Image (cartoon, one colour):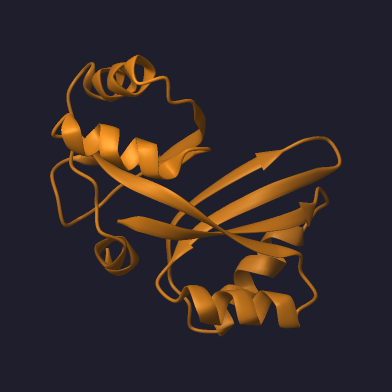
Length: 143
């Protein structure tokens, strides 16, 4: 259920993102989802990939600052208000979303959203109790 996400610290300068993604590609690692958050000086690239260990090894060997974080991939009904309903469940349980980003899956007709929570296990229990579908990590890595 918990999905391993890679976070890479990047200087905010031309070509840096392309360079990192080329390294990942040359290693034969396939990106399943990504998010990039930036400031004027640096950015955090977040990746969900099909081979976390190889990607981390490759990036660290290239001198990059890398961390691995556990997140959840949640199936969201693909209709107006679908995401709002899930956020209502989380809010009612007192769970704060630290960040989130969406991605597309060819394997389902639902939207997929990656969530990061401070209290991951509490989020899992809350979402399951509400009947909200969590996506197994292996399925996410193979999408």
